[in-house]
Length: 247
Image 1 (cartoon, rainbow, N blue to C red):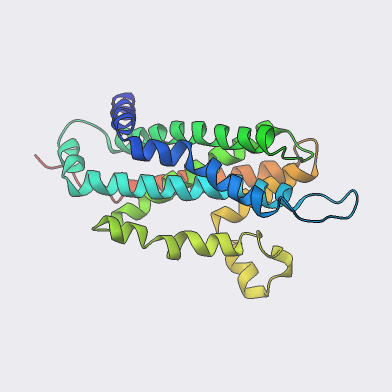
Image 2: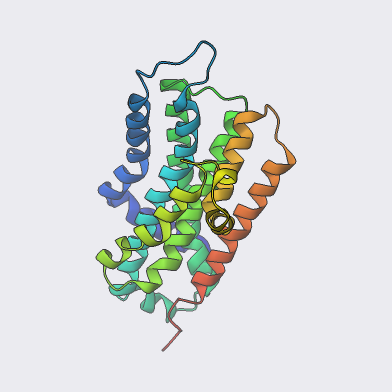
């Protein structure tokens, strides 16, 4: 049942060319805009480019936003069209259903993150100390985080417009407080305490660790662990939002 659900969702996505374009093209296109914003900056000799710091963090933020939008709207369609209720009348287990969706979207997230990271390295010459493989790993986990959050939030929307309205409530505060614009230790105590509870904070921490160190550090693995625990927790919470079985 798990793999049948995964295959069904992937088949639906294959025929949804607009969503495929969102997943494959949009993060790389947005990354290109970030690169061109800083293309003509003047730097002292030996100073790192601003793109190497901002572009690296965007590799976590863009997949997170895109997968949150696509997952929340796709799952909302499943709920409003009755597909989800019909599936729940079959012998399928709730975990198979939810994790089937999660695996399908996560596979797409992996493709998306690999493409965006490849563009950052090979097209825009992203220059950091750490291994690019870890950057891809963080980007994939972050995209999966967007999937889990989208699955959870879709339960509280009745229309696609309402699903999009979660963006300024759930997503944008995380972008503002994750350390992209102001280092977290330079924030006031309230904002720093709030950012401690936001998943995107740990993604950005992990990327900053990769940027500063050639080898993985204990802090990097700690951030990985927290991100993975948040993803599993959100998927479990989302399972309670599924409709009950009825005959």
